[in-house]
Amino acid sequence: MAQRVLPDLNARGSTATSTAGTGASVELLAATDPRWLEAVLADFPAFLRDHASCEKKASGMALAMAAHYPDRPALLAAMADLAAEELGHYREVVRLLVERDLQPGPDVRDPYVNALNAEVRRGSMEYLLDRLLVGAVVERRGAERFGLVADAHPEPGLRKFYRAIAASEGRHWQTFLELAVHECPEQDVGERLNTLLVREADIVGALPVRAALH
Image (cartoon, rainbow, N blue to C red; front, top):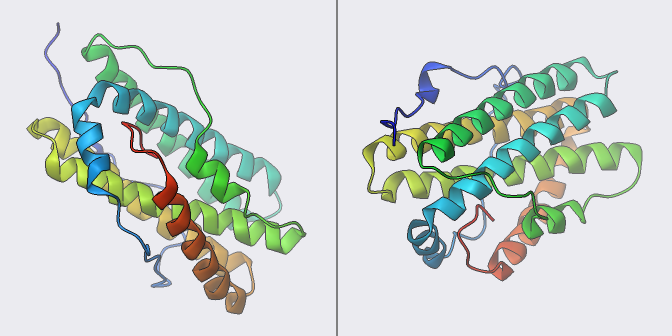
């Protein structure tokens, strides 16, 4: 097997944070069950396959948002940047798979993301706000879980890689939240975010423990 050269994501930087600066925050109401990390470390190849799938789907989601809102320049620019960055992450995780003689698995339905998406309301402004806030919450949970992997993985190179991934997820949730404040009535953002965070805690608590991001 070829020597593993892990990507340095910190060196690439992020272009998906042009709306940063509001100081808003997403505080998860439930921490990840410690058994999740045990499952991930026990079957890291399965986790890598799922991670690749998640990055690919995240890129597709950003492209869909960009296509849906071509008349909102700040959102369009941020989603175009985000799609490119997530696709770059997919490329890097695929590289890790190939270096380990592994293949990406098929895309499967994500029960966590699907449950959160079910909370998205109809109505043009409600739909926009909820899509952005769901994006923020999903990225915030990703930052937490990738950070756990970064702290616990026995391989130094992968710890560095996942620290960079966690930092990237942190920038992403800030982008989604700041876009919500920019594009939607600010007084609606906090109340709706709190509602979604309560629902997210219920959803994450009911997830099966498995070697996958969600």
